[in-house]
Image 1 (cartoon, rainbow over the protein chains, first blue to last red):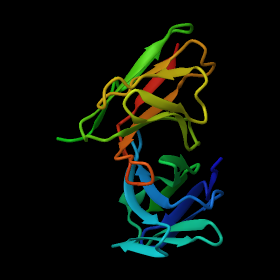
Image 2: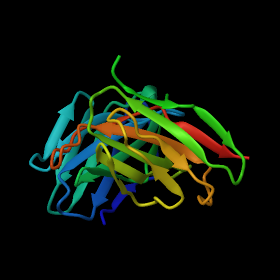
Image 3: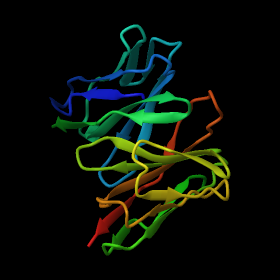
Image 4: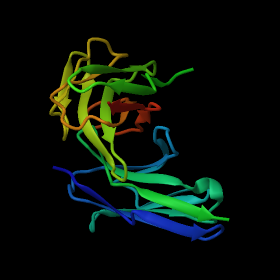
Length: 110
Length: 115
């Protein structure tokens, strides 16, 4: 079955620095890759997604890149702010199911 | 407001008891999902349903049961057969047409504690 690996598990950056989180997936049939942000005690919320026919997508300070050949995709957050502190999950979709990575706890220090 | 609602937010259960977690959505979504989240771990799929009166097991279905009698509702029962039920449970929904992968909307979760 599909497996999604996410790294690092924790990430600490200074405010204003960039943060990068990486994921790999196992099933080449996966065609949709969303990223979710989860704040403490809440459900995850979609922040950006990318489909397999696109290599990169940007939304203000957030960008996602996809390398289909290598089967990995990454989340890039620039000019980080304290409110970016949260747990971030990547996911890969196949057959309508979302398989999630293990999560990255991002801490942005003022 | 459109959305997905889970209740209750906190739930306590004695060992040996079954308990049912509620999930309702008014987004007119076909697909609904139940995930379990443990500290420091990702979300693991318990069950999912892509259409009324049909559902499939996810990766960790043992000790759980679901029903999908209405499009809007997808309750999860945690049975006494689930050996380690204490966790944060998340329900989600998406448009869900086969081959059309779109955003999943999550509820706020139910924290279940076995006492």
